[in-house]
Length: 200
Image (tube, rainbow, N blue to C red; front, top):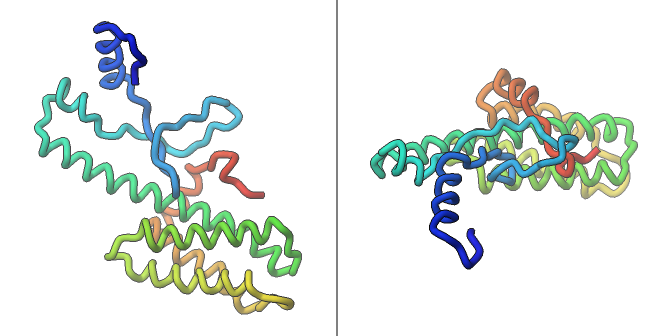
């Protein structure tokens, strides 16, 4: 966007910047866009990447429209997998936090917040991220969701059986999201969520 009044040089400079200096994007479970964190203390380790640039494709690379749209399709696959990796990492992190608290019956406000957030991740995964060919992961998300919902709904003693199901369900879902245990381990090692997305 350029505010009026503007000159031809300003327009040319803006186009040049869009072609050659476009910011790389990051993707998390619920965000896709430029990494806007400027404060060094809040920088994440979420991998960034260059997205297809229609102006650069036409003006510099000389790509035909069909080739540009093929690149966009390939990038959509990359973005979707990065979303899955981020969600898997966050689900795994929450289970690490809440399982000891549930085992010891030391339920705090943060325990409830984490479980609520886990429900949101499972809903988002099943309805917005998972593709049709991953039906088994979608079904696991349903069982996982019901187990977590049961723990949140309990009034009194926590069902130890439900607590024992959390880790196996988490491992099955997160491995399915990442494609393998090795990919899950790699995603966990390469991901640090922005501060405001962390609940301690």
